[in-house]
Structure formats: structure tokens, C-alpha cells
Image 1 (cartoon, rainbow, N blue to C red):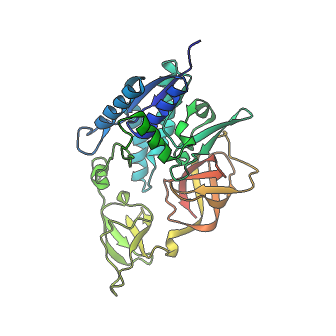
Image 2: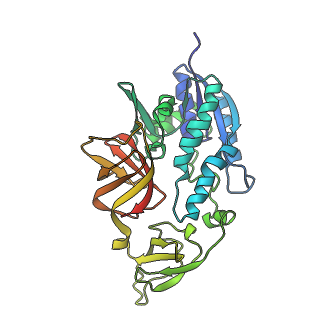
Image 3: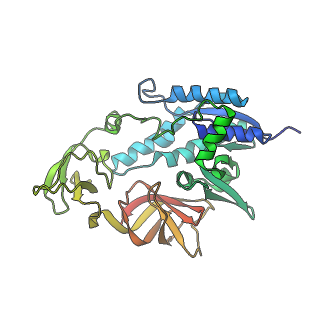
Length: 361
């Protein structure tokens, strides 16, 4: 009987390469697949797609597995990028990585892999899957500093049942060690930051290609004008850099932070000081919710939630009248809660799901 076939999403990075290596060592029939998700201005200095493809192919060669590339640029533009622009136009700050995982990596890619005869797919995410009484749970990666369950919270039972995350059981240092011992060409490759279609380019320059600039006033919460913004879409709640305004007239140099956006008046509200009350919220509302088990969780004694990636879980209470909307009430006020970002719920290491923050309350 043939060994089960697993298709690994090879990104060109070390995590996905080690994923493929580990599965090959475990006896699976492994194929590496490189996803091309962006084509616009892909020939410029900022997008590393070409180099990533070369690195993925080189890793597949060392591991000794078949390798192919597939183009999901049309699906990405329709399902992820269009939503990305809609959210920015509405003054919110979206997280395209969350949508990309649900719509591309675990939908378009999964469908393609199944057509190739795969029984499961695998990626280099730092997360884990556990089956308990026929239900699949999404767990944090053991390296909590690298955990990526936040970006996977929209996956459903069908997707999780087909997903493998081998590096989720390891520390990042172990992954690099395994890669170096195996002679993988990307063993020391720097982790990618951001989304490929933006790459390392200036964010404003990128958005200007797609959305018109709308400059307006920067004001304090009491309406005093302190500067001009270049367009509300370029700023996010809690942002400190790039505001172009100095300290107070008294010259104390206290930094300014973005506290709010007034879309009707096209005003950017800014405050001085990291701990200003306008940057703190105890409650939030979220919509477009997605729950790993299929419905909003109930009867859980204690929830933790993240309102942004890399945040420590914060104790909170969940109020969900239905499966698509919910409110969170935190034990302590949270800093820079940002509409458009995801609020993701946990019970210890189990990721329960989450939704898109629509309001700070």
C-alpha cells in the first residue's frame, strides 16, 4: 500500500522546508508546492517572490521531493485583496494574513492538493491540531514567542482535519538546527515580515496606487488642530511613528499617538502620552465571527483574548447573542484596540475562534 500523500506549502522559508523534511523522514509521500499569490508590480525591488521560489525549489531538491508552483493570484485578488482595500477605505486596519489563510492556504491550496491525490496538507505555521472525541482543536504552537494560531483562527473543522503543522511542536531554534544539520539552503534565511504584495516598500506608496489620498486635519480630542494627516487609511490606532508633529509648545517632547479616526469630518484624533485614556478600552464589539468548533463557545470558565498578534492573552468575558457577533469585556483596559484587526479567543492553549473588531466600547 502506498504511503499517504501530503502536499506541503513551500514558501521559501526555513519553517516550511523543515515541515517537508520532517514529513519525508516520517515516510510520507511528500510534494512541495509554491503558491504565487501576487502579480502586480512583482518585478520591482520590494517583492521577494522570485527569490522565495528559488529558495523553495532548492530546499525541495535537497530534501528529495517533487516540487511545483501554482498561481492563485486571481483568487487572492478576489478573496483577500478586494476585502483589504474595502477595509482601508472604511477607515479600518485589516489583517490580510488572517483572510489569506482561510481563503487561499486552506481553501484554494487545499482544494488543489486534494485534486493531486493528497490526504492532507502541511504548512510551516507554529500551531498544533489535536483531535478530541471526533472534534479538532486548534492549539498554540509550543514556541509561544512564535505562535501563529492567531492567524489561523478562521479555520473550520473540515480544514483542520486536513491540516498538519509539524513545526508547531518545536522551538524556532530547533527548527533552524534541524535545517542546518540537513544542509537546507535556507537554514539561516531571515524570517519574512509583512505580506508579499507590500514587502518592504513604504506602505503609503503602495496604497496610493489603489486608493486616492484624502488629506485632513490632525486634532486633539477637544478639537484643537495640531497638524495635517495624509489620509486616514495610512494610520492605525496606537501609531506613534510618521505623524510629523513634535512635542507640546512647552517643549516637553511627549510623543503623540493616533487615538481615533473621525471619518465624517476626515479628522485624525491624536493624543500625547502612551497611557492617555483615549487609547484604552475595556470593551469591544466584533462581527464576522468564525468559530473553530462551528459555533460560539459556551460554558468556558475563563477566556483569554488577543486584540492583536504578539499580545499576551488578556482575561475577558464573552457575550455572544449569535454565532456572528460578540462583545468582549476585559478585566483590565486594553491598549490601542483597533477596528479591522481580529479579536481572537483562547481557553488556555486552545484557540476557539474570533471576529473582526468593529467597535471600541
